[in-house]
Image 1 (cartoon, rainbow, N blue to C red):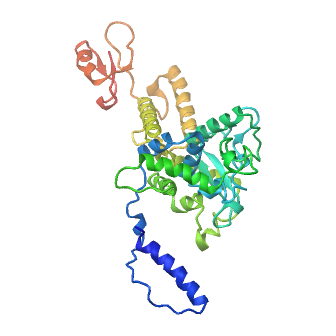
Image 2: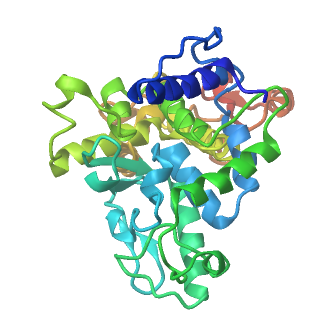
Image 3: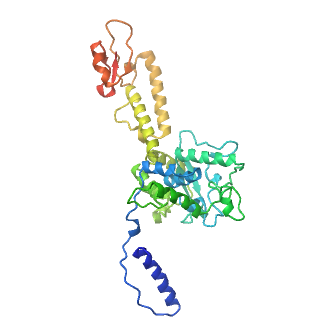
Length: 374
C-alpha cells in the first residue's frame, strides 16, 4: 500500500492488543524497521517568501486561518473543534471592535493584538494568550468585511472563523456564521500547501506552527515565552509563572516581547518594507546625531515614539542656540561658506559627489552618510 513501516507498526500494535484482549495468541507479525520521524524527513519549515506564496493560494478565510497559525502558533482545533460546535470567537480578540465597521484598537504604542485561547480549546486544558501581527489583523478585517457584506451581524459571540453560505449546503442544521470543523480548516490549508510546495519537500498544515516557533526563535524571543505562545506544556517551572492566570502587566510584557520579534514573522514583502523603512529612519536619525550603535529594530513602538519626541525637542532647541551648543548634542556645526547665501544641507547619492566637490561643496558628515553641502 506504500505505507511507511512506522504507520504499519501502529496498526499491528492495535491488532495485537485486540487479539490479546480476546485471548488469542498470535506471534507471526512480520518484523519491521521503524525509523523515528521518518515521515518528517522531507518536511521543511517554509521561508517568509514561501509563506507569502501559500497565503496567495488561499481564500480570505483560509488566509486568516494560516496567518493565525503561522504568526500566532494556533492549532487548527482552536479555530473550530472536531464537531464544529465551538471555536475562537471575536470576543477572544480583546482589541477587536465589531460595532459598525470592524477595527482593531490596540493600546497606544502597540501594533500586535492578543488572542485569548480558553481552556476548553487548549490541548493542555489550560487557557493561554498568544498574539497576532498587523498582517494578520488586515486579513481578519478583510474577511469580516466580506461576512458583513453577506448580511451577517457580527457580535462578540460570533465565530472568528465561520461557515460560509456554500459550506452550509453540506452541513445539516447549520447556517452561515456557524463554527467550522477542524477538518475544514486543515483541508483548505492543505490544498494551498500542495499547490506551492517545492519539489522534494513535504508540507503538512502543522508546518505553519513550526514556522511560528522557528521565526520567533530567529527574532530572539526567549524560550519560555515562545512555548507559552504556542500553548505548550511548560512543565513544573511553568506553573510558577506563565501557566498561572496572567496579570495585565505580564500580558503587556509578552506583547512587547512579541513585537520585538515580529519582524521575523512577516512575509518576505512585508519584512522588506519594514527593513527599508527602518534603514531610512536610521539614516535620518543618524544625521540628527543618533549614536551609530543604536538598534532601532530592537525598539518597541513606544520606545521609538519617545526617541522621536526627544529628538524633536532637540531640534527646537537647536533652532535657538545652534545644534553644536545643545547639551548632549553630537551633530557637528555647519561650516560657513565664504561667499553666497547661507548653505543648504541635503543628502545626495554617491555619483553626484565629485561634481559637488568641484563646485566648492564640502562634507558635513562622513562619506558613509552621504551628507554634503552643495
